[in-house]
Image (cartoon, rainbow, N blue to C red; front, side):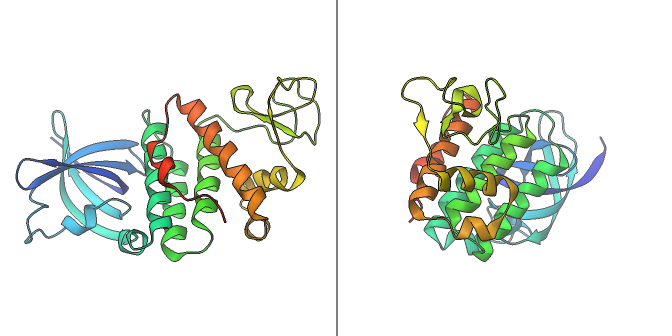
Length: 242
């Protein structure tokens, strides 16, 4: 059986037996992988710490019949420790890797891997508010999967904006004629913030009023969970913008 190398982000781990773990990985070239890391729960393990959630590593794997086997792991980004000591970063990172796990059931693209790595790096460094990093990640990851929300034109009829209603089920912003009764109405600050989060315009994102950030976060969470067809459990633990 052949061996191969790839860059990976560790999404989650499960105990296997007394000393092993099953690791779920998002790789740069091979999509989502599940592999066995033998002996990593022993204190003498050479690379156990490199295969913890949120870590980025260069790994060598042996292609097995059902699960591949991790043979080597070299750290590329040790983000786990800096994330785990901050509650807001930790909960945001959990929501990000849970979404990545759901979005990459099929073969992933390198852009999904790079987007997740960039988000975890930004969380570890505290570059922006954790909820803003998560919101931007969710919007961009959904777009890479073919579910980009319409933020300028009406998602239903294509009428040019600006519009003030957002309906997850219809695909984003909708005009007054297409908006169903009870549709969420957005102020101008929240609508601009959605566009800035999608574009990565961080000066605009960081300067957004807390009320606009809270409204945008709620809509992004609803949109992501609608298209994933089931809830992102970690989102319930993420703090609202303040």
